[in-house]
Amino acid sequence: MEKELKRKKETPDFLRGIIHGIPIGLGYLSVSFGFGITAVGAGLSVFEAFMISLTNLTSAGQAQGVSVIAAGGTLFEMALVQFIINIRYALMSLSLSQKLDKSFTLPHRLLAAYGITDEIFAVCSTKEKLLRPKYMYGIIGISTLGWVTGTFLGAAAGELLPSSVTAALGILLYGMFIAIIIPPARKEFGILFTILTAAMLSVICKYFLPDISGGFTMILCSVAAAVLAAILFPKKEEAEQ
Amino acid sequence: MSIVLYIAVMAGVTYLIRVLPFAFFRKKIKSQFIRSLLYYIPYAVLSAMTIPAIFYSTGSFTSAAVGTAIALGLAYFDLPLIVVALSASGAAFLTALFI
View 1: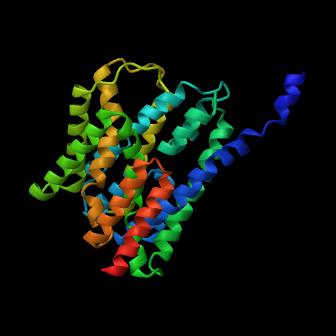
View 2: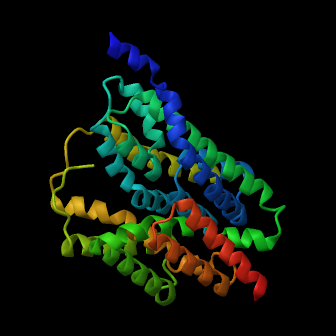
């Protein structure tokens, strides 16, 4: 009985999700501002940029997707690019699927899968014991709000800002990528090796094989680097996150 | 080609990747090679996307290089994503004012 009373006083799942998601939402707000500017710069409309953010909710995939559109790439190239860039989500989904509460029925799974991003995964896998649908909806809701609002503002107001500001904001997304890959590279040599190899291959492709399209170059370089790393520095079986 | 088609393909592929393991997959991947490959791919992708593209992201090689250096430095000390990203941008902006 006492336990039950205590349980009732806990913050409701949805609210707790929102609270945990606020830092993510704020981060997304500013980063997606950069995406909005980039997308409009690549020739998309404000509405198109907004729709891409709403339906994809992912930074790297969207950034590369916009460059495929701008370059007039094929739909096959687009699908392959998205597959390679976003395949990491499959791992995160897999990992999260192991710690879902019983209340997570199939319809909830189909809905919540939409919002599995690097940051949301990181919070969901570390802050909660068992994931309940409403908690995930809270964290996904506030994060998505930040992501689409930022995209809209960047796409719409990007033109109003002085060009010196929009130019500087172009580096935002890349800055975030650096912030994601550098800290783990300090701790694991395999990751450092992967990053350096991929960067080196990417530079070689850019300047010596300029005829290959950007999307394919990115796929070739990253898969080659990851295969090398997987052979040279295989990950030992660990207790999954 | 219609942009709607591009967006549909982007969204469809991205959603399928997320939903299939989340809703239907229950087993664990056994192959150490595949596990390792999946583990390293995000880092490889982000690195290949960033280098050398970041140097062209601000319209000026110098300002982008300064922004990159700042981002690398702050990321090395494990500062939050948002701090690293905004500082890189701020540094690129300030550099552009002086060149």
